[in-house]
Image (cartoon, helix red, strand yellow):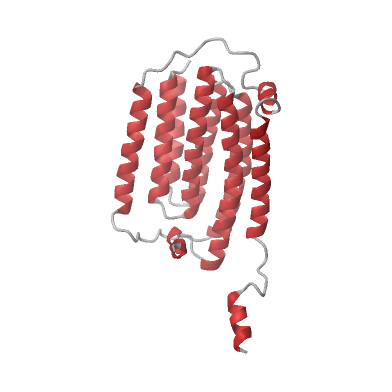
Length: 178
Length: 100
């Protein structure tokens, strides 16, 4: 219980840090704290494969990508966030979201849960267990994730292709004028 | 053993923090990180219930969430970078002209 409290506080600090930090780099570092705390939760909940995947995919790949983009787009700038266009939107949104989240948390904590069954099945949550499930009955999900990642890679290449001259509407206008 | 309820409560709190972040920040990168946190909260609930019911299906769902997050971050950051190339400002209101 003490370990849960410490981990929960670390995860919440990481989460709050993400949304209050002024620089995006600090947000990214706080997000790493949050992600590592959740990975430790996964180990406690005997999901060893997912804990490793969480650290490798999130703290490794995704955060490196984020840091690349943050340094690419915000290097040497210290912009104030622009004012809001809808007046009072932030306060309303914040209050409503906190009420909804607090209500969910209270309901989640107070709801009578089933007792957690003791004694885990063999290979629960480790690499062998996940492999048996993903390459056996749940293969369709593995194939779906593979297709999704392939689609994302193709999509990124399409989004970042160099602009063609003819597709540029301004150039086409100039051609028409001349 | 940690009670299941407390983990669900923690996940709800993390989800709410992420929602607040998406709603009150205007930097698209930070909004994106807050959205990642919401994904993570959902995955935590799936893993907690998988442990509680001794069913690996919940962990398979968390695996899908991790894979989806990877794909989503790639596409989303590509969109943010291409919008930045057109507008040269990191502000989510820059894309409000996209509305019909």
